[in-house]
Image 1 (cartoon, rainbow, N blue to C red):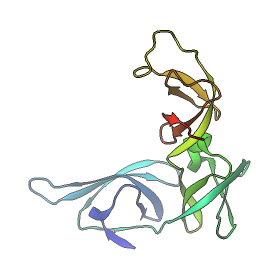
Image 2: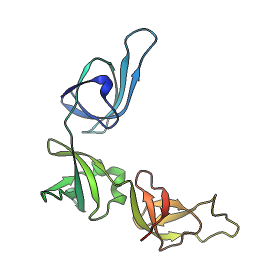
Image 3: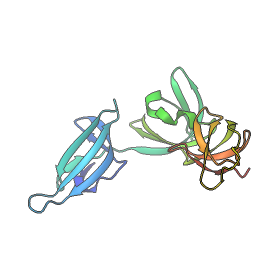
Image 4: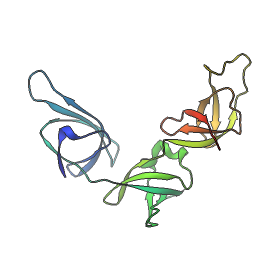
Length: 188
């Protein structure tokens, strides 16, 4: 499907010379004189190479049809990470390079958004927050105030994060999957 370059946004997938690219940033530039242009920073899905392209705002670009569907995470093995479509019970194996640094936050039975192009997985989106348990943390240092200081802690998935001084080992906490930061104590 051909679209005008100036309509592309972050997260769109475009097809350039038969290769798929995901748009990282899209910026419309209107110079004082001359033709307005659209600057696109993109990542090639097949090998992760980043490219930067400029198009006149009226130029046509081939936008790839990407299907976003909810899947449930099952398990990981030698083939990759296995997800199941809850409607059709069809299973999909997603390679390690697509999951990337989201791997520690994957939990069995977790609902994720899986983007596919012609049946091939190209992107994965986890829920914004996950609940994990603190397995170890440093003891509170006397005189620390709860409002301003954080202490290091190890989560049950092996990721290190910073938590407020009142959080102890064994406490369940809510963590942002985007950057691994502490949000709040879990309410369960």
